[in-house]
Image 1 (cartoon, rainbow, N blue to C red):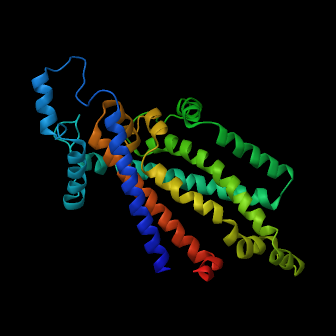
Image 2: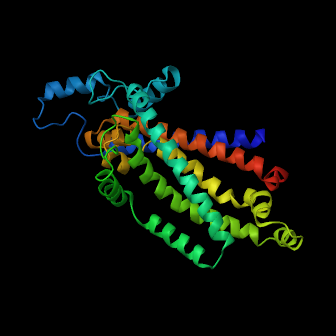
Image 3: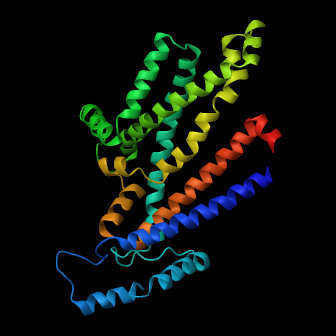
Length: 307
């Protein structure tokens, strides 16, 4: 177990290093610079701004200084657009918003997706199965930028307390959370159905049926542990994605989370903010995958035997 965790951590560190290096290179290949505006700055002012942020240095010097600040000070650097505000401050303010939205949406996804997949698998090739899978397929095919305004018009315009934009009160999380929850529930339903069908076709399930085990006990005690493996593998990266900001949903509902900051930073060419958000997002993916690996190791005896 410990060996597996150390291997995953080593792979995660390598992934973060490569991810941040690629990001560092690509954003500096973008046309323009962070200090572009409606009015062109004089050359001496532009040179002074670049010197203040170290952008007049060579590529390798900037790259070395960036990693040195992260490793020695934990500093992601200042925002190039928001004067006097650091990237760490922006992340610390935006992450709790995205975290609340992500937790709420994943609760909805799990409550809808996993039971739907279990029911569809148990009633394989019946009208319940076909109905659930058709709805799940529609949920997968409909993009977030379509579902978000549809829910905003259908629910936000007709239910008084629901908010279609902003982040002023607790109920502002409902519509964006519902949007993300429905989208993830569609994937969970299909993955759960696939995993449950694989387990329900095993010999030990047929033996349990022959012994007269009830349907409820058959699913909960025998099939559920192995059948949820694909869904759990999906939940890790999906949860990391929603808690670090859904770009489309947060933009549609004007949620001040990390997704909106990522869009604005890309538009404004805020180098340090883009790098900080990408590194934080990658870190969340690595942590979520590690958590899922440990969870699968605990519930799957075959993995424990293999190790």
